Image (cartoon, rainbow, N blue to C red; front, side, top):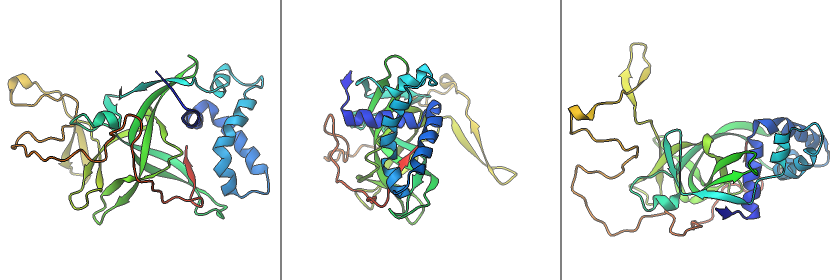
Length: 292
């Protein structure tokens, strides 16, 4: 059990509200009120929109036409939360970067696809909503408790700037972070990935998406497309040389002699509560967006 600071508590609560189906009608209602006000650019309104909504929603929920569930959400979660180092969902194991530093497998990488409202500049009056993919790594796993009304498991992540090389392969730099005011994401929204260090540049890590262990590509079919098949469980007793799948991606080869290099693991969390990175973001006050 841990006690969340006010900033983290507000960030997590805000993200849950904006991703809860029962709250969407109140988000639209607040949006209409904000857009009816004159004297501010749309960029200025949007920048303070998510923070203003929490206070407005808490007052709005006092009305008689609000359900008990919505009233409970408006009060916010308990400041005392559960903290995990590992969490399993839909058969996938997720770990924090601090726990990954002591394991031979990597389970902290995540990918999130979100609808994002973007502004080209502070003078932009025509924001766009696009589907964007975010790449990050888990730093904390917490469970928020809305006083036994409901519970939500969230991943607190470092989000990285992503680029493509000349071959179209996506890569990140762990010391170049972005979206630091929106670190939380629901555990049910993420896909797993892992990062492989490039051999030409020390701080470049390529993104590899996780493929289910029993999904196989059977090659081109007669219609010119590709078809994937789910593999049936195999009986290893008939062939004792088959490896036993323990549900982890092993990044260490066992078919060649090991080469021992006296070098510490790079860019992984050495501190219990904080990872030191070089502060970096390509997004200034003229490039603001938020995830829904």
